[in-house]
Length: 99
Image (cartoon, rainbow, N blue to C red; front, side, top):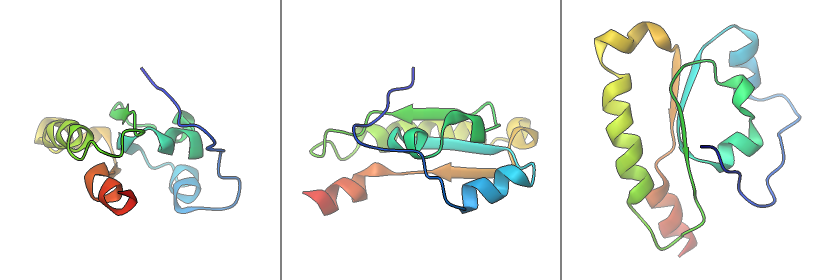
């Protein structure tokens, strides 16, 4: 299930995400659900798109544990042909900065 963070709007100017998508790259995404507001799911062509709620700044490890668990699976040789680029946003350090 995808939830979107409050007050996040799609990035409309050129970006690395848009350039990768335009080049036909399959982007896998794991991490903070805000990314899917900034760059809607249509840009992530890999079957690995996993977004997690990001509002609890006191939670330093739930999202990171989920990202790490899925990242280990994504990196298996059996899945190597399902992505060209992986974005794995580990939220714990980000939340430390906000706290």
